[in-house]
Length: 324
Image (tube, rainbow, N blue to C red):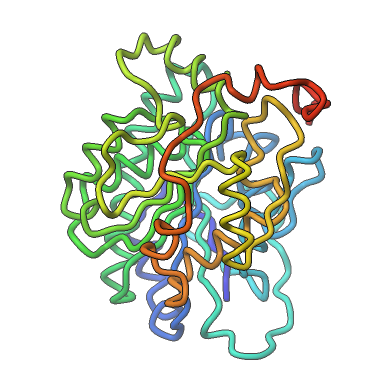
């Protein structure tokens, strides 16, 4: 299936119209991938379409991991000729084998997350409107709900988009180390689309420092989603992936996830071995892994903030993630 690069500044309707034939010819999940802070499609060196949202990321260190490839996309690409094309050379299509109609259609959604944190925070809210327009078109053309995976401030984009969408337009949403607040999640869950979707909030005490910095920078009167959602709805699930009990539960479900190696890391939610196969299964809507099964298997409580940073050093040999 193809990989498509779309930006918040593009003419969303025109792109969706050209994508309609691909949607009609396939039965795999439609997955929109949303990057976080610092990426911007307007600058080649910072473009997410040349990095994590590419099939072949430009070599730039250990964080250059292809999301679409790990989600099952990789047998071909499709461009957006009349839109703002990604600033890197498109990946050449690969030979098609097997039942390509069941593969996911992955869409990298780029927005301007560059500049200061405060600027990116405002831009994320605006990008949520563009993402909502894209999801609305994809849902209308395909007749099936759209899946979303978002990291960091991309979670704010996804949560904002949900508030502007009709029920049934979103299927499952995976938020990785979300740079967003509990009130953002509550607003999304209170919306028609958010209430009908299923939300997996991936957290880790590795991200505690980043959560605190966001709270301080925005003078927030509440906690980020890294602390989990208090009194979550039945369609919301917090999953703390540095918790040994969580890792044991996932292993029992057939997903062996590597243990965390560092005390502080904002990217291990997609760098850690074993996590992407789980995300792929969740976003594919595998009937053998309903949310009720995940909920029954996973611990329901989040470990306290700083519990990882203050843990005995013998089990945590490295303080910070190495420079990427």
